[in-house]
Image (cartoon, rainbow, N blue to C red):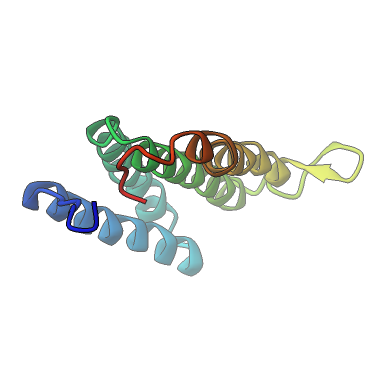
Length: 131
């Protein structure tokens, strides 16, 4: 078991690296308030994250982490759009604003990782996984 290696095919690794480039362009655009580029970068960033998640579905550790990334990008993108379109600080209920709705997908990511680390992984200690 100590000699087992998890290998990522080169075409998958290239896609993951390109995903990082799109993600950085999205976040730089957010920081610099470049609305069209920021909104445009949501699509390749999210699509590649979904493809990576689909390709790693046979490994519970990978799929859980990659689903968490998909919901993180979704939350992050919603938050960015809410600021770009100036509805982030509008009140929704009490002191909660529309920006705070991003907590829903962020929380989903935490719950998915909690499921993996607290429930799934301890019950499958003998199964060879990537994490």
